[in-house]
Image (cartoon, rainbow, N blue to C red; front, side):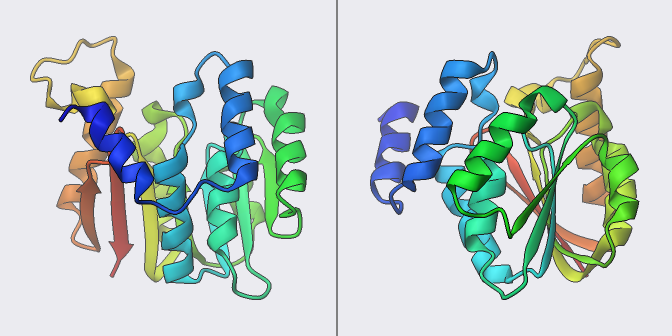
Length: 213
């Protein structure tokens, strides 16, 4: 059985992809040059389930892309008054993202910020219950230092792409490969951090779950 067969089997035994997310994923493939960045059906279902399990009132996403993961998270945030703040640095994606947030009928639950999370997070009041980081890989160590103090004790931090197409296993990383260097540094930082519990799930490009003690 090859990887594609395994993925097909997984998806056949996972809740169906919501129609709005299917449409968003399709449009992402048609309208962007890096459609593989979209979370997709299986990871989206996991994000929704984790949000349901943790029942966050305040959540943060770094790296909205086209909005798939934000909508998937918000679908699982059923606590009254729950809000997800999602931060996207590329202002050219704003109209597209907002159109699908509206189509998903989640405008009351998702607040979109356009800009750098380092300039945005201090504007948001409160401790976060749930975070999902999928932004600039070169900034992962900086994001961790910035965001962990804002995560409540017992809160969950999710970090995408921590296997980085397997390049984290490369013994000799080129000095110019800042993405791989940063992801490896981040993974080592978290592994050595006694303030948190952590595990990497081998889903897609690697999803790290970090629980703050």
